Length: 149
Image (cartoon, rainbow, N blue to C red; front, side, top):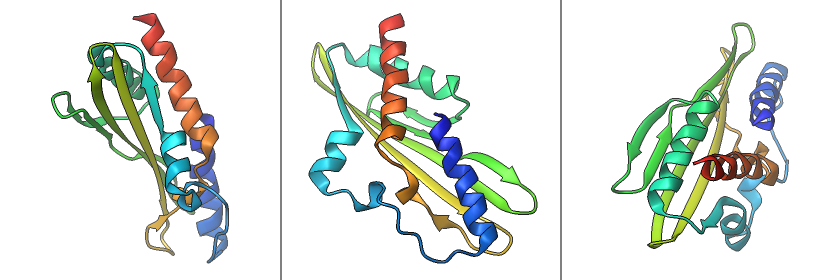
């Protein structure tokens, strides 16, 4: 979770410094098969337990859930902001897709989005700052929430 805050801080630096081109090898460059591997987990537990653990994890980490549709397996957060009045703001958003495979297997897909804007620049997509560790941090937190219930 701390690394997502790093995304927000980096975005503030980047927008404040006027850097135009970014070339980090984050999620925007991942091949499709690798993206699925990093962003998807199978849990050997029922759908309701996974869904509730995701909502708890999101809220425990300060995100606001704006959509939680249990029937369709969709959870979306609002952007979590880290603001600096002079430099701008970095924002992180999470999208979850949860699917029941069978009575005891649930598939979870996570997408992390990072954008930044400032008074000098329009909103800029910084998804490429997100890497495997950012996803693993969320999955680790969800694992703990599942095992608590």
